[in-house]
Image (cartoon, rainbow, N blue to C red; front, side):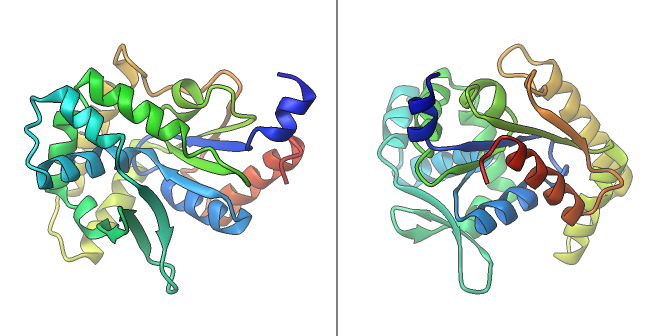
Length: 232
């Protein structure tokens, strides 16, 4: 990539990692601080599933679902109180996106190659000036392999289970901590061992273990990396 290309291409910060590593919180904080666009890649499958369901498109019509996904106007933002907003064609559907039932729908369409290809295109379009913070599992390896700053944020399964347990308890959801850990370990094994887009750090990513780190420390380490790449 030439110097002129670097100057005109929007900067991209990718933050990959397993569920519960803190990547979503860190990504939103940095996007707000930098004034950059934000992409929650994992939510795209949930959004597509909800949109297809609302449009009464059967999931086994994979090409139709994929084509419909390309028509959606999606924006990740927040309201004046800092609460998450996910705008789809101007409507905030954040509360629906985060439902456990929506996650089950998303897992069905995520297995469709046509939908994955369509959402690859959707994700690439999020890279606009002044910059993008992309949160996911394969942002630095598959979607934005040319990103100049890549982070892989990890944490122990025990710590991630504990974080998820506290989140659910705050929402009044009764859950077993031991079962949460088992589910996280099983998902880790699937994500890290799958043939397509496995959950692994990019070769040029900075790997951070957040098990014993606070949010502020993680954000500061990423700021340092951004400065070293002359992105801020």
